[in-house]
Length: 462
Image (tube, rainbow, N blue to C red; front, side, top):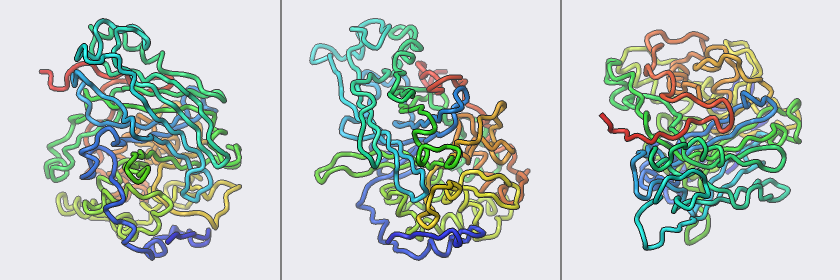
């Protein structure tokens, strides 16, 4: 069952009742698997297809462009040789854009990969000498990729034989990894750029939140769980008009962004991973629905009553109340519906700006609008000169949940959001320090692809 919602039904964001009308049958667990940092049971056994994070932001050094970036293969130990880390050649990796609010992809950037393995049976090595370029004969294994742009008008190949930046083996093998990174950034038709390769894990947080919310007394904070690990990054930077509805950013500035992985099976392609907003599957979706939820396309989110109920009546505030005695906000949580399902529209509360509801696009049909879980970005809001890690909650409208920048502290933002900060305009002071991991351990770049160079040192070093 598909649900189309009229603009009038969104007044006051009273969508929860309408959303709860459809069937639990959409959540059959045989339809696929799920995504993010090992938060769903089935994807934990398939890391090459595990989407970890999605980022979408107006490029800080090129404000007429937008950067779309997603990561896969979590918790890569830099010393994990001799085969290291590669994309799955049996899969399709996608970054999808909805620009008219109907929860269906209007533009898709899709990567597929093939192995270029020159090792044969002669050696176990990844490289047999220092590697100083992507074409260095000492590099015995590399991957190549094809990048396509898919729209309703057809499919266009943007890159036919791109080279993936390799895993960072270490300083002896790759004495200047920055050179390899630079060579892996290639231009695409229309004035854009793309990158595929390894990077330092840019998501910073203390995952001891799962030990009864930081140890039950906020004692287990301040340790960046992902420090030292790497991920595999796919990114594009394109003119904003390339992804805007009717190519008109002024009239139609809002896009929805999510990433998926499709894996080839005996019956064809199956979606096995999906990710939009961070931490949704970890702390919103219950364990029994995690695998099934990420097999769904966003267009079917409105019909998934159990998941919608987890947004309007979330579990986490109740846990915080039980552990720390901080009273949970009243339900239904229509403020969270804004953040996760509709985008934030102009209202009289603390957030007064037109931000990222796709019904703001002037050429979109409001009767076709579908609430759905995806990352929403208003491309008309310029980059902040001095970004605040708390994004919109701190008055920085260029930050999460208006898209997601690498510097946005999404754990602290979402912790405050579930405690009602978007309703009151005030931080919950008892939790104001958050997880005390406020920035990445390595600085972000100032130009595309912005992610830090991958670490080459062991995570377990003393």
